[in-house]
Length: 83
Image (cartoon, rainbow, N blue to C red):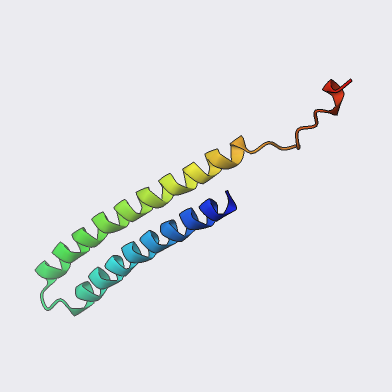
């Protein structure tokens, strides 16, 4: 069970890192673009990538919050029913 949680966290972190790497590459291309027209096009692509990345991060955080809400606050004690 614990191993599964760590595995999921690892995959989420790996995907997020890969997406940020794409964003960094686009940002570098914007900085190196020779004309303003190319810069505008690359900035639009960068906005789209950032929007997708933010949406995925929001979905992951919402899923984590929902999973935490399902965790019981107190440990179940069945000694009351043993009598």
